[in-house]
Image (cartoon, rainbow, N blue to C red; front, side):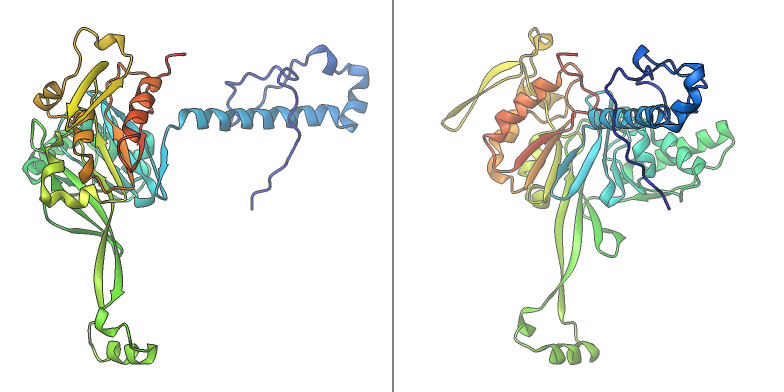
Length: 379
């Protein structure tokens, strides 16, 4: 049983306890109090009998805890979408790892952020190091914590190389690295649990790649039995008649690195009608782009790119999706929410937010961005 004590928080200058103090470490034997709270030796007994001395310590502890909670909120730049808490880090060319705790899943592993270690399932989209570099650390750390071996899904073409990679690490470190490696091909279905399955879909990067769609499973009574009463349905069920249809509902789609061509493939329709689409995007600093009878302008205010803006063609040549390609294909988007990732490290949070705002005005889905690891232009 845990007991929580509620103690009023003092003014910030009431104790000289540093905000960086770790509340898990012992408090120092002596505390430096400002003049108004200093306790003379002759009055020490009387002070401890009252609330001043003990409550000051209690207030300091609570203030420290409030500080830590506040900092945690500042550092957490995850997004809550459609009943899912999506977090992680995705910085183009540096690292990408997107985590959905409700699914016990991580998509790509980047440099293995600590929160990814506790996800039981890992889905690798392609073999670039900014998406796969932390793979050995992910497996090793789970072993260190005595967590069960994870299940790792990879494109079939890299399965053999992944096995070789771990053989090398086993030989060098002389430790067991246990995991289940699943080569899951495009169109195949794998049951994660009794109400959740996953299917890869085709994406288009500069090396072999694939995205993933997670589906929830539910049973729905067949139309021909809807008019029946409960006892009649139960009788049919006991007789061995299949009375329900299995309904797959796409919940989350993750593209990884890809050009926008995946949006034009009819076989990828489920990725564009999942509740949440998590996709990468590139955009330039200041430009106009025309499609149909509309001229759209996006101003990202990035002076770093003034000499070499990201054009649509530049993005396609490097196997990525441009912001305006999403706009151009907006009619195919049936998702309830779109989460943009993989921005260049040259951007600030404010620049990303402006781009998101422009996109939001053009598509019906709620648009968000994963901005952990990016700095504000004001810091």
